[in-house]
Image (cartoon, rainbow, N blue to C red; front, side, top):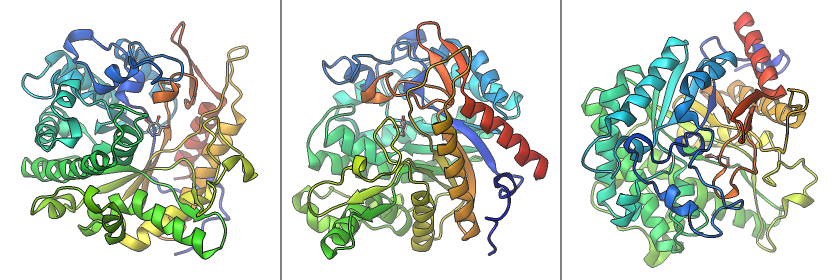
Length: 447
Ligand code: IFM
């Protein structure tokens, strides 16, 4: 392995590297009740008083559902070769079981065909959190039957689109669904019980594994995988207590997902800590979860800092912070990838999300988001550093194509490289989009 650190950044990536932008259905589509779409748990959660910072919802969002062609042109204009999006399950199957909604399926057919017509690889995610509300009424992800409903949904999407997808991801960020949605209650469905969250995490992983088996049995053509939100976790100080806290946090938040996926077992120390809250499992569950993946998707935004004492305050670290209050820490991405590769020998790995929220607004038709540009540039360099050290990186995708509904933060946090004026739905590429396009142009020329 040789270092490429002396080369200009655009010369550090292979010709076939995937470069993209990412979104998710609920965050951009709007059209919440159009053409037979059913209610999702996020539609319902947004209506709970106090759930969303600006009391907004996804009813209109970026109105992407009605602006598909223009948005596809916008993506193509960025010079990327890939687009990561998710399917709204209740748009294609209103109740999460039973009848399929032809209008919803047709929308995603147009999306995928529109990408291919523009020379863009489609990267589809099945579950980016908007579970049909009807399934929630029956227990949602805490209920084992939802696992089988999800497998049916995965097969239906493969039958309709599987021959045209580059990758098919089962779940986006199962930790968020389990912990924020079912333990902390700050995301849909807003439950606050640790045992439920743990059971949910198990069912998400199980449905991932069983879906992969079913998809392969039907001749999957797309590469199959899962997307995890992962942080490189460091101790606040070198003290033994802080180092122990970091190891424990790493086990709870990262290895709880990566160990079963790659090794077929949950971390013993977390099972011991959970005691009676450990998940109910059936024989064969862990083997199903460990069904080999074709790729891993990693969503990386910042590091984690663990302390045995008072919680670490990012504002005191001296590092730049994004609008989310998250430290800008690109080296953590390299460290994380190296740790994962050392522990599990990674399959081809994509950075499926990376980006930053900053408050920005157009001035004379331009948005000068130098901080976001530097964030993206420095994290792309961190990916190149990981490749130098042997990590099999396959692609990088910016979160996000455009400003959108940032869950419980509503529309106040802007992650896009394209600015959205929600009053007019006008899209304005920010300086970061211009930089990305120029950078990708240089990559193409030197490859
Ligand atoms: O907007 C989210 C996305 O839906 C999942 N990953 C993190 C992003 C920023 O918070």
